Each structure stands twice: as C-alpha cells, then as structure tokens.
Image 1 (cartoon, one colour):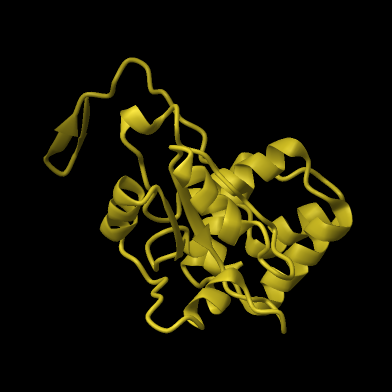
Image 2 (spheres, rainbow, N blue to C red):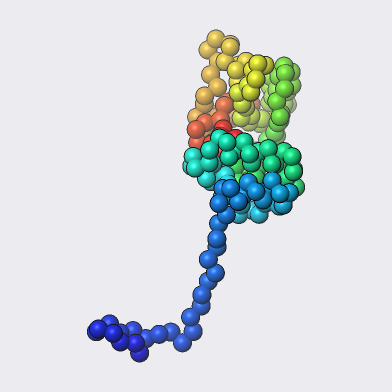
Length: 188
C-alpha cells in the first residue's frame, strides 16, 4: 500500500510496460529511401497520412519521390504504398453478385486514350461491369477526363451513388476521383 497526503492505492503485483512506437520524422523517412534502405509499412502509412493532412511540403514530396525513383520500391513497399493510398478516403464496394463480372481496365497514361473509350463499353456490352476512375492530364496531351469534358454535356464529377447507378444500368463508367475517393492520389 502506498500513501502520501491522504492518497493511497495498491500497487499491482506485476506491471507490464509496453514499448512506445517511435515514429520517424519526415526527413528520416526521406533519408531511408535516399540511402537505399527499405521503408517499413509503418513508414509508408505515416508518410501517406502526413501527406494527405498537408504536413509534408512540396519540396519534401519531391525529394521522397526522387529517392523512390532512383532507389526503387520493392514489391512489398509498392503494395504498401498502394494500400495506404487506397484507404485515405472512401473505398467503393460492389455487390457480391458482381464479383464474377466486374473487371478493371487500368492505364498509366499516355497519348490518345485509344483503349479506354472503346474497351469499357465493349466489355459492358459483353455483360461485364467496368468502373473506371480516371485522371487529368499531366502535360500537354490532356488526360481522359479532359478529353471527355470537351464533349458538350459530358460530366465526369460523379458521386459514388451516380457511379453505382451507371454501373448498374449501363455497365461501365469513366469518372473522375472525388474529393473523398483516394485523396492521397490527387496529392501525389
């Protein structure tokens, strides 16, 4: 029994102390990759969280991206980064009945959009569901969304409910990311 100035309590027979998880600073995370070392899952989760919260400067992001480009990311780091970015916002989910028929068409970008604009409706005509969240142009070529918006009346800013409705009725949709779907992607 411990007593001091009318305060008393029994000390437990055994005290378990849990180690504190010390998070790396932004500069330390950049240095890990700059030095060719492997980022931990926690490093990547912390980086993406701080980035989406606006706590990483453009210069720091540029330094980290350059380090990742020059040193590379292994398969686990790439998967961790993808997963962490995916879960920064709302994640769409599809009905169980769509599992055998939902397909993905993904592109890293390029000139022409020759595949997306033809393949998505063709797959839908064959009974598939093709949800596509597309991006803006990064250069003079313009992205898929930029090109689609040049069509009078074509709207790419759809809500999650509108995306689901288009998939249910038409079978395919090409929409822009919302402020709530993968906000980390927009920052990157």
